[in-house]
Image 1 (tube, one colour):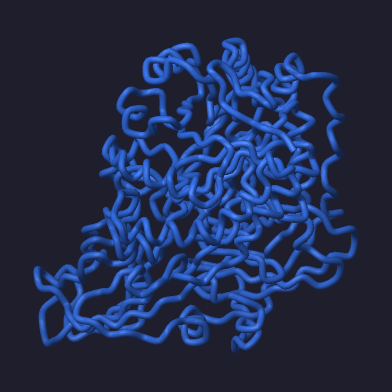
Image 2 (image 1 turned 135 degrees about the vertical axis):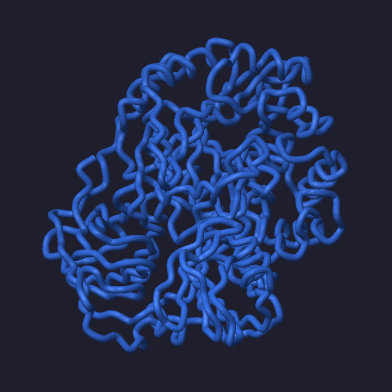
Length: 586
């Protein structure tokens, strides 16, 4: 048992000054069988603490239906075994480049702009969730012999809103549910962010990637005493589909870390190990100062150019950080653990079966629903996946432009069963005019809900309508296809036919990958494939897309097994060659 507190100048453990050398590692982005290894890597880098978010939407997929909320507790136990303290950031909003910033689609769809405010319905839902989640952290607080030393109130709220009553109510809720360790907030080092995001009596921390002296000077204007901490030291960054990868040189990042520590501050390296946004949970951003422009979907990999790469291996940044952190260690740092085993050799999996997209919808989709105007994903209760909209163009009538208003995010169109192009903008029109009568299908895909800024919680699907010339087409039939529907017991019933080979159309492809050597970590490569999702042995590895920059998907070794491994590829454009599962060259 121990007592951890916030002193006038330092964090204190049983009354003695202590510095937090923390690293972010999200338990939900790392296969559970690899938690111990990744936590040992943090210790070997010179850290004494681990920090994690908790994504609400992952654990409460429907109101009152919870999915493995105890995962947080198991992770905290793993941190304790590794000899690390733990910082818990339960949200309810987390950002994290995660779908909808961690807020459930069923909540933002109903409440809209009332989320992240003192709205009573919203706070009631938060209270229900926290009552389910927080015992995992409360039971493991440091004064009960566990690793938890701090809990965050909301997340970077000052860059979003100014409802101080909301933050006060959240702090009261956390205390009322048994949180006794110090609470804190974290915001960018800007006056308006620190003003909007801080709570009287709660430690304020700052998030930045460089310029520590200036950042802490700004923080001190708002909080003249208390320990200084950079709660998110951005040592790297995340990538978007279709853009160049973001890289930060190791020496530059190490110099910024050294500056933070040289000022006597504590730090949380974000990310120490990024991991992977499995299951299609990667979020998105909007470009433009007010996020009023194009959607920028986040790639599946959350490697983040972190010191510990996506496969858990040390990078040049790891070794530079270890040198800096060793100067603040009580003794010699632990040895760096060996990397997890890698796949012995490449495995080629030829697609043997295929079900066209229409057949996939018939097997796994929701019942069709008709309404005057297109329902959104939220109205259809679809979190991640596709919605097929059908609408009839009456006739006879001459060819007119057919456009979609409020499209989010991408639609593949068919007119009378024939491909008619793709739509990607909120007022996009099909390449060719459409004459009536005609039957139009629009397969709309969400590329990830916005995770940060004023567009947080925006709905997906067709949020406006379908226009022919200037006339709305009414009587829209819609049917959802969720990623969560792709489970072995359901897919096993699919009417697979022989696969058409490279150039084949959209649909679900099945292949068998036979591992004859040792199983281990690998990459899945999809040469020639367009865009879609991959499952191995029923585990969704996430989205792939030929626009890059990500060219393969990380496959954790514990997912593979010796012998036959089943591979599914949900291709939404055009099929490529065989699926190749290969050792990761690093």
